Image (cartoon, rainbow, N blue to C red; front, side, top):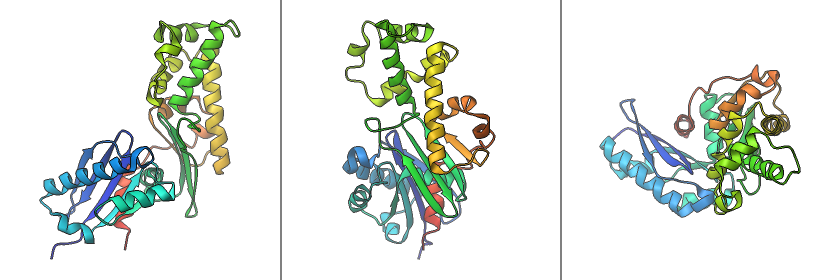
Length: 280
């Protein structure tokens, strides 16, 4: 009988990733399409199943190994128990289903205590202390994502429109943003998705020294600082920033928070694989 295998799965809006720890000790990794349970649990189930199938094929394994495998899937949207249950029901194999924020934190601190702020297109904040998890945010662009790239891009457009109307002073940032959105921002952004607003965040960072740039970055830092304080994170304690915008914002954080910044020890996929290995 073949040895029991371990499988970690990371699923999000940009794609899903599968890692199989093989009986010989090696790890095989395969990428697949978007797998966000909040956006579309059905599609997430299909993408995860198909990606895992390709990984098994590449490993020379059959699906007969799955009923006995240790499998953990960290998937966006699965912080909500009904969506986690729906995804679990759609997968043709048994698995522990958690939110991808949990596997991201586990990977970043190798299962230990610490705080993680994910600031990409969206945002979430999560902390583990004494085995207890506290999770804030992650509710999406319409309801939150404070301090994220999309949030900053939308705020930048809002303030730049006030500058166009003469309600506040225009500067290099508002001019650059309006030029980027010509001929008219409301028409350009009529069907905009969060990723389109996030694409404007670099414009703000490029004009960080302008009056509006300082204001916007100050607002983003205030949102991040407030969320970390609500988590119970103490300045100087270990903090991992992930996401493209998070890395860019790091230099603007207060000294106390910067003092605690540490690199992630591993990825969300590493975290899922480690959590799978700990299953009975």
